[in-house]
Length: 251
Image (cartoon, rainbow, N blue to C red; front, top):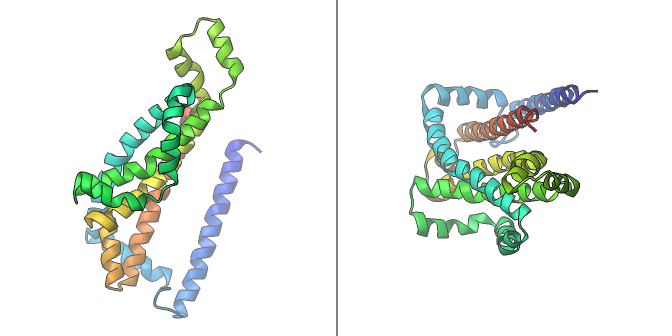
């Protein structure tokens, strides 16, 4: 079976699993066993209402702005730092401990520091997005560069390749799958950072809606916003996967 065929088969299986879960949820929801397990049809109806009255689009626009402001710099700088760490032992020696420590740390605990640095405003949400996604991109890029076959580097050097040529022709193409995986995982982490920042700091966007509906026990609306966040993360992940496939030819 070809790679495309296998991906298609897994995609169909995944959709089937999701459909089965939603059907089971609908059945349990209609049994009215708990306030916190409403039927999927009710959630969908409320979601459409929030979409039509502008509540979701307005919240999502604010959230997406913070997401872009935080993730784009994290992706660019993360790839650059990861390439440097993977290529140069001195850079790796200087930064590896910091990167691993900050990646392992509960980043929510750094929220007070971010507030002190940026204040309670949209900028701190973008900074939270950056913190959540940057280190994932760095670690994956570093791993990809270090996995480059030494024989390819030696051969390129024999033909007179300089450092820029090595990066452009050897290291980056070799590390591309790891880089794209890092960007994909980083994008999902960025969505988590966006929600954490909005819920704990600025109370704007989708995070503010989650807090409001949760505190007022508007369960249908709460699930509608949760579903929107999950959908956003899924769309971003799929966009990164599509970009990865498009870059295969370049590699």
